[in-house]
Structures are given as structure tokens and as C-alpha cells.
Length: 283
Image 1 (cartoon, rainbow, N blue to C red):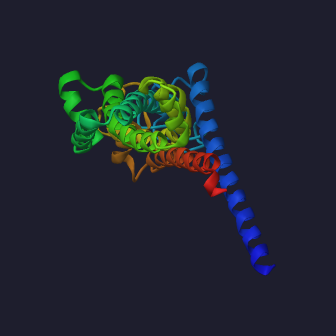
Image 2: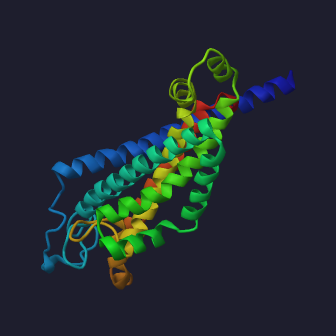
């Protein structure tokens, strides 16, 4: 009885922990999305508006979060930067995830030389970090939103391809797939009707986790000047611009840094919570 009671308590604690992670992640991500959408129609001040006479004002002295070296409202810049960061990260993960997932499912269905070739291409892409890829693309295309999205998306393709391939190979060994093959369904039909729906949960969970990495990568690209072109604010550029003023105005670095950390934490918690929610073996 004591052992059963202890097991029940542990299981209940795990369920509560799982729910807390999912709730916390959903709340943080929901808040970020709401702020990003709100910034499209309203910010306390225009994010690019300069008021030199109010430069380097601390939080609450001018505006809620103070001003930067050009007198721009930090809160407005953070709100506008939220839209830029989320839009780039979501677009890049959507593009890279779609291409990678299609490639992984196709490789699991065909096997042979296509699977081998896909894995070698993935190895080559993994050898080039997204920052280096963006620098190479920037040399040809110039810095900007398109360069950032392309660099992150290219790096996401092999990530999703490997995850999808592994999940799809497991699905192809299941009884329901064997039954579908026995009645004469084509590999394309089996992949679309049976394999994809049964691995979609894993793709969604992985996408949520990769969104956190994409936001961190976008911040790094913006820090290096390879992200959205000025004067559009981004969290990474705010960090880069704050380096000179760390002693005079530390909030210029602390606030965007905390925002990036919060965004990454939110998507990681959301991904972990979704993984636990979708996996019955963890209940």
C-alpha cells in the first residue's frame, strides 16, 4: 500500500509539473504574440522617433522603460522588435520545417539512395552554423529580413529532416502501415494518410522548441548587423547599440536581454509541455 501510495503521489506530481510547464509556456508565448500584434497598431511612441533632449533617460523618468542614446522610447522599440523577431523566427521555422519534413517523410518512404543523399546534405548544412551562413548570404544578398529568414530556414531544414525521418521510419514499421501496404495503397498515399498524421505531434513539438532557437539566432544576426535594416528596431540590434552605454545606461542592455531570454524560455517550456502532453508514455 505504501509503495502504491508513493507511486500515485509521484504520478500526480508529474502531471502537475507537466501542466505547469504547458501553462507557463503558453502564457509567455501568448503574451509575446499579443504584444507583437499590438505593436502593429499602437506603441506608446513611434519606435523610430528621436528626441535627443530626452536621451538616456532611466526607466520611469521618461516613459515606462526610459530612452536610448537617441531619445527613442525603449518600450516602443521592444514592442516593435517583438514583431520583427517573432515574424522572422516563425516564417523561417515554417519554411525550413515544411521543406525538412517533406524531405524526411519522402526519404522514409523511398529509402535507398535518396535517404543516403539527404543525410549527407544534412551533414554539409550542419557543418555551417546559421551565423556563418547568414554572413555568406549577406555578402551576396545584403543584410535584411530576407537574408535572416533564409539563413535560419536553411539551418532548420536538416534539423526537421532528421527528426521527421526517424519518426517516419518508426511509423512505417507499425501494423497500420503494414495493413495499408497489404491492401495495395501507394507509398504516397500511405505517407499522407497514415504516416504524416501519426508523426505530426512530434513535428509540432519540435517546431515549438526550434522557435526558441530561431529567435536566439535572429537576435545574433541582428547583433552582427545582418538582420532587419535600420531604423526598424530588433532586440539584437538594441543589444549591439547598448554596448557603448553599459556604464551610463545598463537598462539598454538588460531589457532586450531579458526579453530574448523570456522568449526562448517560453518556447522551450511550450515545447516541453506539448511533448509531455502528446506522449502517453510520460503520463
